Image (tube, rainbow, N blue to C red; front, top):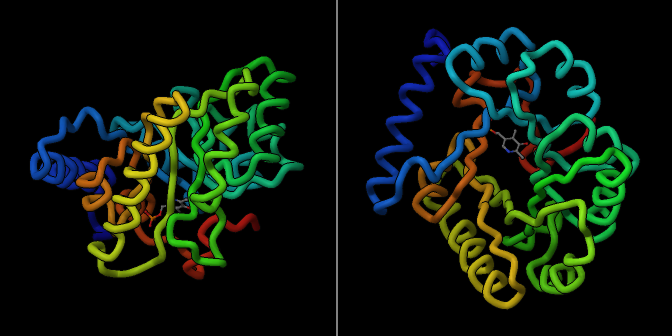
Length: 241
Ligand SMILES: *Cc1c(COP(=O)(O)O)cnc(C)c1O
């Protein structure tokens, strides 16, 4: 895989996206590809940009602070990591969408920072569908309470949900979590009047199943850029370092 250019990998990825879509009768235009650039240098980001990608994701504020100024201004940046409240202001300044709001307090802090910066941001609620204790994300049972009060946050747009299933090399194992997220979305969209249109789910090893279950954003890192030099220990995927 490493001898392929990013452009060649993207070609293969787009064929796989198309075939996952046709399996379930979806329009590929409804699946957005987020290129996860964490640990990769600005040169790799540039190459991805030249290959036509313009939606990119980072999961650490420290890394984004250094990298983003060196990258093309054509890029729309998404924050996909666990966000600490003391870094919210910076996150709101750098990013155009936040994928992993994992508490009401964080939602409140992001709303407040948006007001200060003069921005309105789409955000996704991260749901801990599997209930793994080691995972970030809101337990499904607590999401309705957040949606109940979310209407008062005028500077964020609750655009949908995000999840990270337990790691498994078998992508079929992830299906039930993706399916569950979609079902929860349908339920909450009906009961709370938010469309919750976006479902951010699926990474390099399970994106096809995620698409079959309704993903509107897939987040691919290693599939586009190759293996990262460090090995994230499964559940510290979103850890700040
Ligand atoms: C790193 C990361 C990804 C991309 O992972 P790959 O397995 O390299 O595709 C997706 N989502 C989140 C939240 C991440 O931290």
